[in-house]
Every structure is written in structure tokens, then in C-alpha cells.
Length: 282
Ligand code: NAD
Image (cartoon, rainbow, N blue to C red; front, side, top):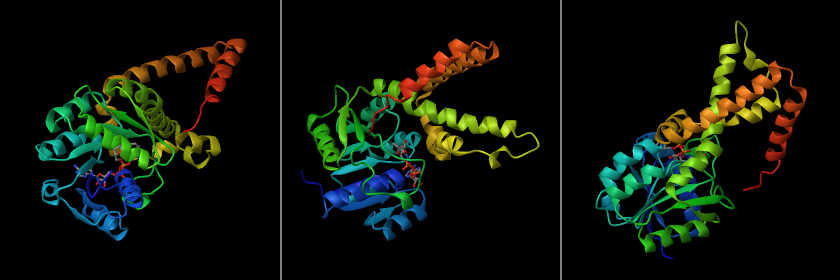
């Protein structure tokens, strides 16, 4: 496959890592970055993540890319797509929400828009944390619709395979149900747990005492608030359903403790542990 010119909108941790990975695989590629933050563009140039950059999405037209990648927070995508209407390029994204958003973007950008979500990343944000190997050996979910252009889909699939990802296709709405449960819910719980500790810190600082368990469990609450605000709002229906079910599970646990149900409590914890231990990588 040939890839000569790519444009990345949102030159942060994910977009920057994508640029570095593509550069490794296609050494002669030219990378154009767009970001609303001049500092991100400056750092991206210094780190050789991009060749040139601009604060304006419209400048992508002059650059003339083969591929455009949306890598900013998901709620910015619609406005960016509005500015890219009619562009002759394959357009894809790295956003954590698909579902209705994919259909909205396809409606604006046409059948050469191909939704995607790399299941890679950390709580880090910003281009300075970019890594060329971020996507290697990690799952990449491709979310085409019945209207997606076959060649465009093939190009995006092949690209991610070349970057070392394990590509899987999924319906955009199913994606949001699944990742609402396995990714968005745990992030909501981690943020809420910290909120609970703030409330429990009644006159003393509870945050001085946590051990390794607390640190492991809440690592993801160190993630970018704007990115997560956008994910929660854009996947609202699924995240609300997941939170409701989680509240039921927590209430069940609370009841077993309150009523000293020794056997049932042991079973509840054993079942949770056994399912946790079934987790596989990646
Ligand atoms: P980040 O904060 O590191 O980078 C986002 C960049 O987008 C920033 O440089 C910001 O200035 C820029 N930006 C914000 N609004 C913009 C706009 N309107 N136009 C252009 N640039 C804009 O965040 P990230 O972790 O790289 O996440 C980027 C995307 O990747 C999000 O859509 C997120 O859902 C998705 N994603 C993140 C992870 C993860 O673990 N971090 C995993 C999978 C997918």
C-alpha cells in the first residue's frame, strides 16, 4: 500500500503515537498536524512527530492528504467534519465512541469515512507521551457501516495491520455497548471513587494513606477530564445503563455485608475473583 501524505487533527498522545508508528512503517510519509493548541504543534514539530502544522483544519485542503485521522476529543469531530466536507481523501478516527457518531460523520464526509478505535492507550495525555509502539499487538476495532466504501475500509484495515494491531470489525452500536461496559464504566467508577474519598476526607487528608491497591484501581482517574467528559456525553445511553447495573451490584454487596450473609458474600467475591482471573491480553 502507498501512503504519502497524512493529516492528523488533534496532535496529542494518540494522534502523536499514530504519527510515529506510521513514520516507522512508511519512512517517506509527510505528516501534517492540526491542533487548537499552538504548544502541542510546537512540541510535535520538535519531537519530529509532524513535519508541518496549523491551527486551522481548513489548511488540510492545501496539504492534500491521502488519509486524514481525527484524534481530538470525540465531541469536536462533528465540527471538524463540517470543515472537511468534500475533501478527496480517506478519513478515519481514533475516537473512543462510535455508534451514532459514525453515522453522523459518514453523513457529512461520505462513504470514504471509516470509523475506528484503537484499544490502546493509557491515562497519559499530550504529544510528549507519544510512543511509536503504542498500537503494536493491541486490538483495533474497525466500525464500518453498510455504506462504507470497500477500498477505503481495506486501506484503513491494512494500515493498522502494518502498524502491528489485531484488527477486528464490529457494528458501531455494538461497539458502544461493549466499550460502555468494559472501558467507560471503569473510568466512571474510578473518577467516582476519588470523588467519594474527597467526601470521606472529613477534616483529614485520606489521600495520604492509600496503598498499592488504591493506586492500581484509580490509575485511570488520572486521565484527561475533557476527553472523558466527551466520551461520557457521547455514549450517554450505554454509560447510564452500565452505571445503573453497577449501582445494583454495589447495593447487592452492601446488603450482603449489612446482613452478615457470610456464605453469599463469599460466593459474590469468589465469582468476581474467578471472572477477573479469566481476563486475557491484549
Ligand atoms: P490528548 O489530550 O493527548 O490529545 C488531544 C489533542 O487534541 C490535544 O492536543 C488537543 O489540544 C487537541 N484538540 C482538542 N480540541 C481540538 C480541536 N477542536 N481541533 C483540533 N485539535 C483539538 O488526548 P488523546 O489521549 O490523544 O485522545 C485523543 C482521542 O483518542 C480521543 O478521541 C479519545 O477518545 C481517543 N482515544 C484515547 C485513548 C487513550 O487511552 N488516551 C484510547 C483510545 C482512544
